[in-house]
Length: 236
Image (cartoon, rainbow, N blue to C red; front, side, top):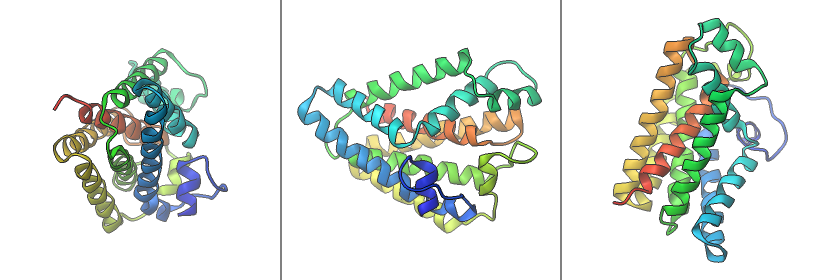
């Protein structure tokens, strides 16, 4: 639990992650989403929906230390341009940011803000808890079931280990229950869209670099959460 909190958030002491760290990803995601949902509701009492949404987006990035946004940027720079596999991995490991990464980050920031500004904040902590739990469950599933794309090293390589299906299934069921408790139709539709979009990121990575990296895990979480928010905020 401590290592999962240290890895996924900017809170707590640094702990070396290991294979069992993944078992706690869904719970940490749910707690993080619930906290953001509480701030979303409280900020909406003092400011307009647009300002409240901006506060939540900024706080999310602050609490996660921009970990997943960095993964999205690096993945966009490496996976989207026409490059060979070796060059894609080099680009994803580089510290700089290219046009693809800037575009992806800008689009995701705008979409997350717009979705939060227009979605219902009533029991909104349930929606965010469910989607954030689901995105971290997806990370754990990918790390347990997909090949690691780099030959050796890399932060995500510490997660290698046997698949622990009860923990992953429990995280998925909890995420779906939280989304349904928010609003059963929109909530479950948002969860389904999150799973689909996150899976598409993994499929793209598998085709272009042969598996996942830590950046791919971050991109999967960001895309899944953003898509889930957009579908949940639709005019149902």
